[in-house]
Image 1 (cartoon, helix red, strand yellow):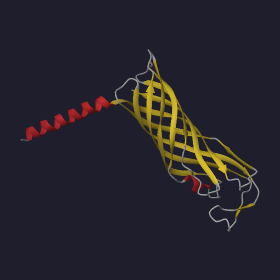
Image 2 (cartoon, rainbow, N blue to C red):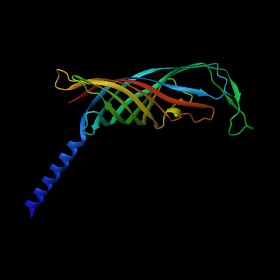
Image 3 (cartoon, rainbow, N blue to C red):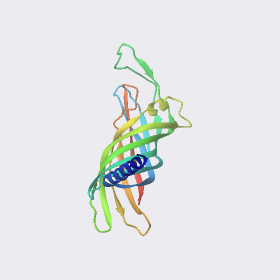
Image 4 (tube, rainbow, N blue to C red):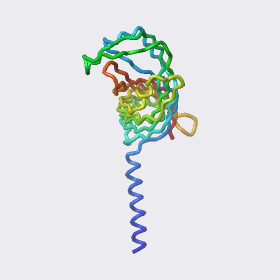
Amino acid sequence: MRTVKIVAIFLFFISVNLCFSQVLHNYGLKIGTVASSQDWTFSSSVNTSSVNIKQRWGIDFGGFIEWLDSPCFTILTELHYIQKGFSSETIANNQTVTSSSDPRNPSMYQVTAYAIPIRVDYLSIPILAKLSFPVEYVAPYLILGARIDFHLKTISDTDKRGTYALCDQTDYGFTLGGGVTSNSLLPFRVGAEFRYSPSLQNLSNSDLSTIKNKSIEILLVISP
């Protein structure tokens, strides 16, 4: 009986391995840089004279598993540590605005001139469809899919005005881009990837503004 159990367990693991090999296409690492910023849109009742949002550069690295044993269409599941954020220069005057939630109770909206450099770290999980066009030595491809970013931490030396609260939450959006992989003289394949990742989540907690993340990633792709 013990021998039968051992043989059964061995056959089970062999069958799982065979099934896994049929759906696993590739795996590897992605590492590079990210240029991130935010889109700020204010209500017409907020008469800011200048809100200048600038890009912030950070790092992006993670791993991926590519599913479906097909030369042209595959699915990517990825896990990234990514540094997003922004840098802003704000110049505005003290103003009185009326909240749309209670028009009878106007409140003071005060913004003065200051700079805010903020780094926001996320654990990003994209699920992407990949369409490849393999030729003799290289394989160009396009990617498109959904993404969810789990907030890890926010770092800023100068932010004292509550901007932290606008960043400390889960974000989501989509990612699209393209790249190329090639067979190199090294014992592994290398490639380059360019992607654009806008967000759909409004990070603002006010009905007077809309704040959304956006980023561009440039990545080196390494796989067996």
